[in-house]
Image 1 (cartoon, rainbow, N blue to C red):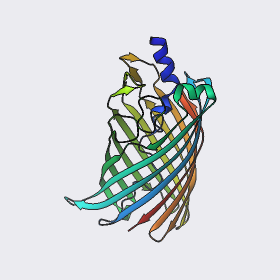
Image 2 (image 1 turned 30 degrees about the vertical axis):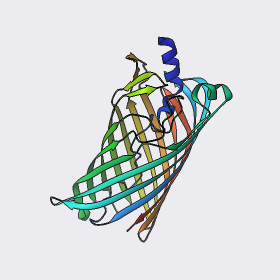
Image 3 (image 1 turned 60 degrees about the horizontal axis):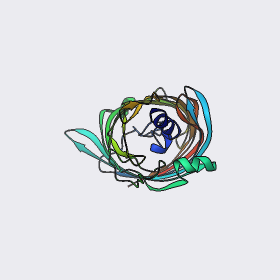
Length: 292
């Protein structure tokens, strides 16, 4: 039983959720640049991602492939409370995941398609200093088990458990041309008591750190590079530790285009190191954001 549980977990780390081996609150450049109180930002995301693996102790142990198409709508309303700027956030993702080859489909399920778990959050700016281009915010986000979850298969768009994310973001202009951003994250997980149809899944606290360096080519055109570290998050099934904590490194690069009351970001990403789980060979994401 112990060996079977470990095998199941090693091949479906990603099947738990598309963000299970990367930062839960996916940070894009400029996310911690405060909006004016009374404004609403609406963003639409589209991701295309391909992952291979699984990996165990840094070595590839299988040749499964998971292709994912992820879309999300994000609504942010900014307001003032107690002389501080705050932003309320609502995110609703939708995911389509497909697996190959045939033997992996038998274990994971052929595909999963549906809504992921709803996210609600609140950000408070501790520093909002436009004169010195210095901004610091702290965020709390609750992820509720509202998405489409099929306990009869391992592959799922949702997680069937509560999660709480505490994150922050610091943005500072070095000069007229260079901007630096740094965003840490901590994630606490609730239990999934219908994992694989009959098991109880628990997960330790997970951590992430995302950073970007942006260059203003023109006021309406920015180029950026970034990196992300993920660690922690070991799972337990029926109380048995799986020794599958995450040690993952990602690189990110892209372009931001600014227009009156709108922004477009195109970003490419890939994993450079994965200790356990699945490796992202490539990911392309597009975000279109409008301000009202």
